[in-house]
Image 1 (cartoon, rainbow, N blue to C red):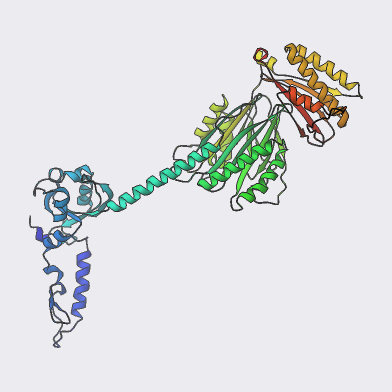
Image 2 (image 1 turned 45 degrees about the vertical axis):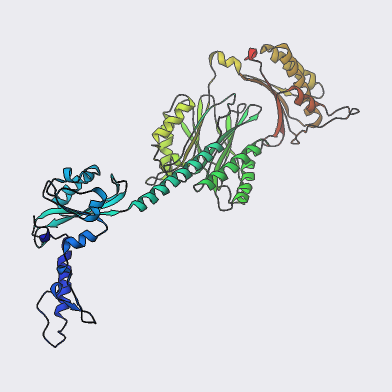
Length: 558
């Protein structure tokens, strides 16, 4: 094969360049006034200002030029890609190669890199192909460009006979890209670790609810979101459930999320209504970062009421599935996101009867680029309607139905809670009893007698029975002395604890104080705090308060 007869130029490039050069030469008169030279410009010797001739491009020896090129160059011919030529750079990189042998044997490094099918494509199509950043056996990375080479003059009518392989060393670029990817992986691992450490490691387990949660970081990007959830036992059998999403990505969003979650837990201990908790959070979010917006739902479950009382700051609606499979949205009222300031949040409520399942979630579960948000929520409703089983089973099913995978482009947090229907032997472990406290001072002995009878019927041991009656007496006495009608005593047992609660119409909350030896009163709350496992108080809707205490049941009574 005559190497010098081959054209390694891109199709059409040689002809266009020659045409432009010939036109320029034809339009340039001879220095001695002669007519323009009819000789093609590529063969015309041009003169410098000093009169030294510069050879035309066609007069340069092709082999010498290619041998001096720092890139790797190889020329193969025919359908089996027989080796015609390799330049000095190629030989330096991979050693001497035998001419005339098929590329599979002569150029094994190209076979290892999967380049041979690319050579076939170039021969068939007559179009160049590029393979970017492949690591070769010599440990360096190259970008390979395979250009069709035609016989003789390189015209379009001449069939492609071979391929020129041009390899550029991109090792520095490839190593820099790998370092960048490694850095992004480390940043992502740091952000995910931070976020997971800020989420609850174990969910609290309320007596009356069964709960499961899951969190899936989005995609493989370095940035993660600020999704979070939490479960907080408030005492007296009540439970707070929280889910939120800090807008933005990365460590900053995760850090803001951690601060908000900590604040929610602190505000929850005040046992405030949901809208007041969000009101406090709104001001705090502005102080943390005025440019960082967050959405949040804060809900409280009271087993005595059988409802979820909630407030929403720009978050997606809670979904509740009843025992018959009907799904409702808790979408009113909804306020703006946290951090906007100046908004008075309000609380709403939705029934959560025995056998019901509620789902709190972030937008990553329902939001898609090609789908309206309402359509995503409707799809989740349909999935929830058919979801049965434990909270964890329901949680996993909802995530699968939404198509959440490791490559999902947004963070997803889901919190599922069930209010189980108590049947069979378990039903005896969950009992309620209530007494309206009417009259004056005679209400106290009547309350003690009522509590004694109820605790006896629940077969509590004597010491727990006596402590329960004493706590009832002190709470009722406190309400009679400092509260106003209507007054109500409620006793409740679960499989883990005894809860005693007294409500009245006065909204001044009691405080534990140290009574002096000469004081005739002021010791009731101190006595309750001493004998009970926990106690607390809260304001009730419409005015009034509730004061409660609880005793952890001994294992023999469970």
